[in-house]
Image 1 (cartoon, rainbow, N blue to C red):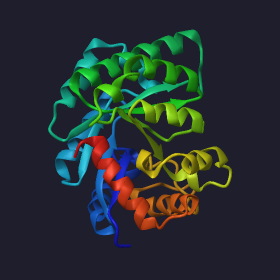
Image 2 (cartoon, rainbow, N blue to C red):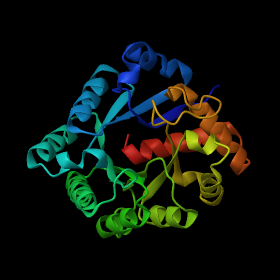
Image 3 (tube, rainbow, N blue to C red):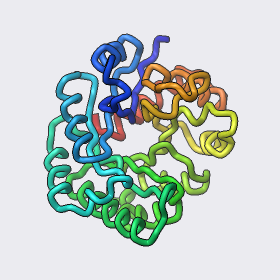
Image 4 (tube, rainbow, N blue to C red):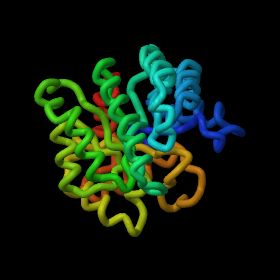
Length: 267
């Protein structure tokens, strides 16, 4: 493999990497992984993301409060800490933030996630940072709330990207709407799964210029490693599947998504 790869979303602070974290991260550049953005999901993990970015030249940080930790997003103290992390030199985005109704969709949970999400979108716009969006079983609300904050972002900021809809699971029609607001579509190991017809259709219908690649490591490992610990070393499988869907060479997918990653995170 001779091409460079941009890993736009990983969680190397996760305990799944406790035994070999340093060795694995150090091995990435020699395997073509030139950039890694390590993404926070709480105040505690966001702090670890900043620490990892300070230790490894090729690692950058994103900080934010995931909807599963929305109670932190209701706390002024927690939000202030995230805002402080955002000012660190190697912090390139606010995320991952968003909505997740998969396990619980009561009015109380939805209200808490709404406030956490919208407060952080407001914070990102104030700090001039892109966002990393998590959306699970909440497609309509995610679109509605993002449109409220980013509906005119692309027209006002033609040289910047608003963010990325991570681990995209929506329709091709919604993907186009996000792209029109200045977002990239995040594609990872799911695209290699046999039953991922919906995501394959999205990849088929949108331009490579609108896609970034990711692992969500240690989760969502591509076929043939499904169910095992994921890492950035498996990104070539994602690249090859996208290339097959688009009818182009893997090197073209790698080059375009690499440049997209740099543009997304302003590197």
